[in-house]
Image 1 (cartoon, helix red, strand yellow):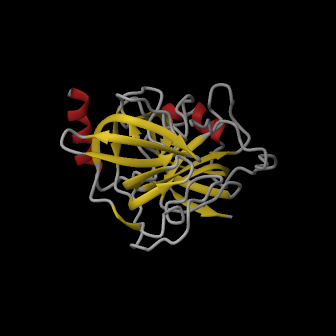
Image 2 (image 1 turned 90 degrees about the vertical axis):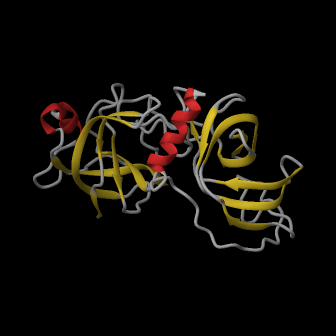
Length: 274
């Protein structure tokens, strides 16, 4: 009960920030897309319709299953139960979760599960408050100092290792700026100060808690200790592989609660794509 009460407090504080899907109501005429993941807009039966979810829900998972890249959770908030689905993430029956606003699919049929649902709320992320190693789908793992405890499934993905298609060689330090390795080395003196760096995007998670989450690397720092990857929040849309110059204030030991903590993060950064 105590965790549930805290969840409702989190809902109140973060309601303006929680990412939500603002899709206009549509009539779907296609069956479920079998691969690689279920598409809520295309996966409905001819009688299905999409609409916006009424609001955030916090409660206990009473049933869960995975299908075609999505995790479905049946959540009991004490007064009603709802089905929600998000990109696959780790969750168990009995876990306490927070479901943000999303797209409501009525009379929804999952071909993968061969199951009908009166309504399923498709959301970008579900916050798992019961698992200290798992948070909200879509944001990556917090196993390293630079990343948040979020299941990318948002299964967890460690952003410390750059995707093979991202070439980190020959990245020049920004004029008047620092490398990521230098930022970590001097973080105690740089706290609350604005710094500039050039790096490549190795992971991008859009519109989680009302902002975009960008993992940058420049080839400096130490992967084993996690000092090669800096997380940046910004309103700018980027894609993996982009070279960007980011400038913004650094915050040490940023704690979002429930163990979701960054040792170092750059928030509300100005990001320019080169």
